[in-house]
Image (cartoon, rainbow, N blue to C red):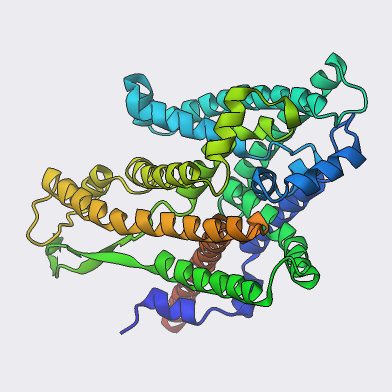
Length: 452
């Protein structure tokens, strides 16, 4: 027997979408800001030698340069004003969240509600400015060392730093505005749109490799099959969840006694979504963003680091898997699903898990269940990100066919669609309430007329 919400979701149509004015405004607002982001990826940083840059990008596109392009929507390949992308903000968020778990003062701020959250966001912005400044300066120096600048010097470095830091802060603001006033998670959508926008060119490059004989027909068919299987597997796992039975006792309101109800607490196999993959990728890209453009000027330490931690290398894959597993657990228990908070909410609502005492015992049980589920969830994320990455590196194809890009596209797309459905359901509920109120008023008027 389907619930009322499920029946309403099944009956949603384009007509219902057309009547939801607020939802349309949110979607148009989101699309408008994402278009602005895409325009920014084509505005070049002043002082760049376009011909030299194009030649360099063609040579680096199969290595770490292709991965950098993936997360910046192609902006770093064109040295646009958004060349650093949103990655400094993500790196700053990782640092602040790790410090929040270790520093008592920050942990207390986190418990202070909205005011504490604003303070933590402020620290994250300061960290973003610092990281973006360091990366922008290193990138400017590396561009000069690689011979990709028309007029090297301090004037170019200052202009490059100001432009790139301003671009990153503007992207951070765009992401926050989309989250607050649009549809979906703004930061994830920015990465999502950057990947989707570059996919046609990546597909053209892929099939061109087949036409020229760089890839055999069997390899092309194998890659296409791998992408389809990965896509289906990701959709299946993202929709998988564990339902925990929740019971509510009988309650008395006035002279009436209401029977106790029951429901389910859903825990997803992957509660952290795409965040662990993005966090892990940002940490791997952090030391290599600058060195990519430095050419032969790379120091011995950085050369050794790139040799062992380059895409497809064993240490790279091992570190990538380790970071994905770590951030899956860390983000789940600190952000997306906190057993203590869930247990407190159930206790406040007089709900309980059959056979488990409310409060601390419930929190311990939820933590135990979540830990077991995350073994599967973290393993699934690592598998999806690593296997396509190894195949992609072996065949030297574009980074857009890696597991991380597929995971981002599917996860962000599903999350955005769910938010659209939630807004439509809320709009339908509001319409039903308004109709019931109008009917009540009409009935009152008819009764008054009859009395007269």
